Length: 363
Image 1 (tube, rainbow, N blue to C red):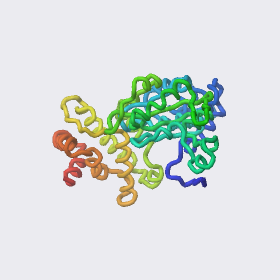
Image 2 (cartoon, one colour):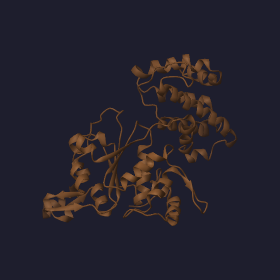
Image 3 (spheres, rainbow, N blue to C red):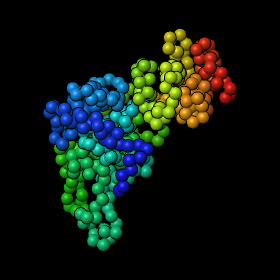
């Protein structure tokens, strides 16, 4: 397949290739078999650091270092890792960067859906060869998990709980025995050192399937929480703003733009918590998930409008235009909490007056 250097979305191992190379060169710590980096350096890659030669490693996750240490330690054992949390808590991003740092590739991936079949977890068959020669090794089509077992690599399973539970349970023997029986060939595929699985799941969305107790026991679960403070959430948003748009913005307006983004983050946090920051007023909570990912999308959209249609800076009006549509996903459950917040909180804050005027004009 032809490589495209202009890909919209590069995998982590290419996006952070220079950082990974620098970490490998300076890594003097013990590594588990078939790991490209030691556990300590994997954590440094995720959390960010500065190396002895001055190379800066950008943070990929803003949160407790201990959570990432637990996740990395789990992957160095024979237990699989399950990252959980509400949508938008960086589960996919963390799993991708962990796989890139440990195995050098994040592309052994199974995407869980209601239509996921067992062969996507285990193996399938090339039917023309199968019909011509019967069940022979060359007719077998390995799944990403089988390839990960044979190469000693990390495999990612996205949205594990979206798979029907009978498909999920195909993982039980695999995770326990570290082998995959192939009865049609009277053989089995055995995992080599370095193989493990990172799965992600959340329990907020519709269409999820509860994991069986037997499967849960095969995973060590790490819950990734929402950012604890506005400042931490701001750092996450700033790190994920589209770089091509950032290059075209009005740099002189950066400080005022950051203040506007902080106001948006405050709105989201207060609605998530069901109370104002000072705790003096209780608020109704929307049913929709008000995640950091939603804020990032809102800010990127406002920045695109600013660059292509406005004054090349993010202002309160541009952000406010997108607030309602981002927060109110379901009119039956989200509209009343939103309208009450606008009238009871936003209207009464002098520094939010431009937000209030912009929001009111869109009603």
